[in-house]
Each structure stands twice: as structure tokens, then as C-alpha cells.
Image (tube, rainbow, N blue to C red; front, side, top):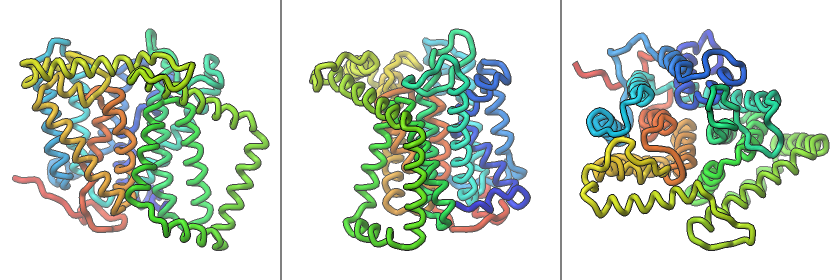
Length: 443
């Protein structure tokens, strides 16, 4: 982790760009904290729109419309293709109504992707640091929100309670878990590249803290996503000789110092806050029981005497039946229309609602994201690309477990991946935007 990147006087422009990108990439935890915990601003979508507009203004460069930077062409064409199809259906094949919120999602997604094309390539170091620091700050604000929430008690899912009337009770723990995963992955990616002892210790405990946040959220998809990341690492990076190298590396003086400090801090924490350990184990038991419920619901196989029907999983199972019905009907070509059916399985909903063409673009986009992500995990070309690769692997579980193919919680991260993942660029330091390699706009 390069702390000099936080020098406002030398790196103000890239810090401004990075903050704007992060506010779009993972801004909902900040929105919930400011709006619902601090009670600043209206508890409505108006505040969210204002927040995103501020993020876009922070991203706006002085060379707007004059200089563009090349994204990943495959991801760009497939991603934009699906967005165009979805927007066409929104306008002309729509039985659910043209909600203002849906129009806003298309506008903000398009504007975000457009401005990302103006962001210089050598922002990547600053962007990764900003992603980590903001996500860590959001983890801290979550703890503050829980401690000041009279309705929350240990054992409940960790999330910020919404303050608007008729809102989902208990907040959205999936947003909490996603932020924890982002902080965890960015910390570990920078930890590998960092040499300073104290910075390593800081990043280690930040990742441990983030893991605790993910556990407290009780979001099954995030648990499974972390499992997928670990599995990907062992498949593409792990070698038997690494065990010997790691053991030998532990006996280096600097590593021994780091290990001793970490063990002392963990020992003190467990002695001082023993209840936290048992609380986390309790959350793990709840997660295990829910996984057994999902298996029973999906397959009919009862692996424990207490296994019961998981109604959210039951909805996804029935959604597969809708997919089969669509496949053997005339709707296979054009689909049923924009947001016609909510399946809670984005990859299937893209087919049911938009037919074979929508499915080809959406599934093809995610397929190539998998290819570029796995290739990056194997090659490790740059820390930002490595972070994006692991993060996509973790969030890919949502393609089969929750959300809709139009959600900005998908497309804001997708836009950043389109811009940076799989894009080859030379290593440079903090440079002016005019010196970065670019694809000039066609005149």
C-alpha cells in the first residue's frame, strides 16, 4: 500500500476521480449511513440520486469529449449490447410500467460508463487505495450504526436500518456483506504487495475486521462467494512448493515480528472480548443451518433432523420452472417483456424477459468476465485487476441466487470491470492525464 498516493497536493485529480468511482462502485453503505444513521437528507431515492450525481461530478475531467481511454472491447460490446436491449424493452416491450427509478438506473449506468472512458489508465493505484479506505470506513460506520440502533442486538443480521416509512425491516444485509468482501479482498491484494511491517499489520487486521462484518451479515451468497475466491486461488495459484517457501519465510526476522504482534493482539482481544468469539460461532451455526435448509428445499435431501423449507430458495426453484416453460414456447425468441417476471435468478431472468438475444448478451458478458477474471488470477498483472477479478468471482454467485439483470448493484461494478479488467497498459507512476496512453475520440 502506497501511502504517498493520499497526498492531496500531488495527487488531487486522481483522488477526486477515485472517490467518484468508489461512490458509484460501492456507494450504498455510505448512503445508508448518511441518510439513515446520521439522518442527513431525505430518506428517499432523491437523496440517492443526489449522491450519485455528486459522484459523477467528481469524475468529470477537464478533457471531457476530447480524450477517451480504451476499455476491454469484448466486455464493452457485450455489456453495452445487453443494456441497449434492456432499454429498448423498457421503452417498447414493457408491461410493468416506466418507473422513474428504472429510467434513472439507465441514465446513471450510462453516464458512469461514459465517464469511465475518460479516466486515465494510471489511476489504478490510487483507485485501489481509495476502494480499500472507503470500504473500511463503511465497515466502521456500520459498527457505529449497530451500536446506536436500539432495535439491534447481538445475534441479529448486521445492517443499517432504513429510516423511510414502509422500508424493509432490518435494512439490507447483502449491502453490508458486499462492502465487507470489497474491503477484505482489497486489503489482501495490497497486503501481498506491501513491504512495510506496520502497514502489513494494519491491512491484516482490516481484512480480519471485514471478515467479521461479512459473518455478522449472515448473507449466504457472500459466504459462498468467499469460498469461490479461495477455490480459485488454490486452482490457479497454489503450488506445493509454496508451503515450504512460506514456512521458511516465517523464520525471517521481520515476519517473526509481525507474527508475534498479531498473535499478541489476537490473544488480548480474545481474553478481553471472549463473548465476540462465541457470538461469531453462533452466526456460523445459523449459516450452516440455512445451507442445510437450502439443500433440503432444492433437492429434497434432508441432511439434518432440523432441516426445513427455505422459502427464498423455493422461489428460485419455481423460477427454473418458468425458465423451462419459456424455453418451450414462442417467447423463446423475444421473451415476455421488461421486468415481466421476477425470478431472483438474474441469468434466468435475462432469458425469460428478453428471450434468446437478451440471454446471449447477458450470459456471454458474464462468461467472458469469468474468462478474464480467471486469467487475471493466474497472471496477476496488476493489483487493481486482481482485486476486480476476485471480486467478480465472489459476486458471480448472485447470478444464480439473487437480484435482477438490470440492478445497478451489478452494473456499477460491471462498468469498472469493463474499463479496467483485461486491459493491458504500461506501468507508470502518478502522471498527468495527458501523458497516459489513450484512445483519442474519433472526429
